[in-house]
Length: 159
Image (cartoon, rainbow, N blue to C red; front, side, top):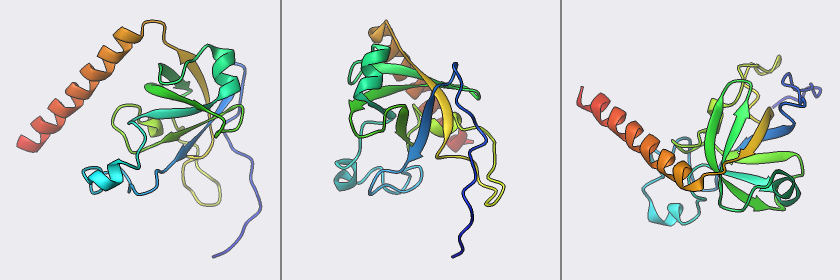
């Protein structure tokens, strides 16, 4: 191992993207869950796919309720995910796991590379979180998108 000096993130917070996304891994799951996702004991440890953990004060300020579907936007794109409101994340930050098909937070991370490690800034991405007014339509959107993904995977596997 070697140490290096701290380097500020390349992605910057702005009025349009005022919050920090940090991608995290769930205990017990590896990478995209292809090996661990079907294990009942490990699944019991997991949050629902695509949770965004958001601080209680931030959720109140944005009008976001616990378990509600929300949009998370970055300079690279947007995803739909479910809010998990708690005091666990710091104010101004959201935490998301990257193991899920719907709400795949790595789709938000920019291509900025650390000048030292040459890896993407997975732990720091400027984002905006927005509530979704029509939760019923949002729930149907998630179901439809999940089914589209499964169909594409099935077709790809069949050749």
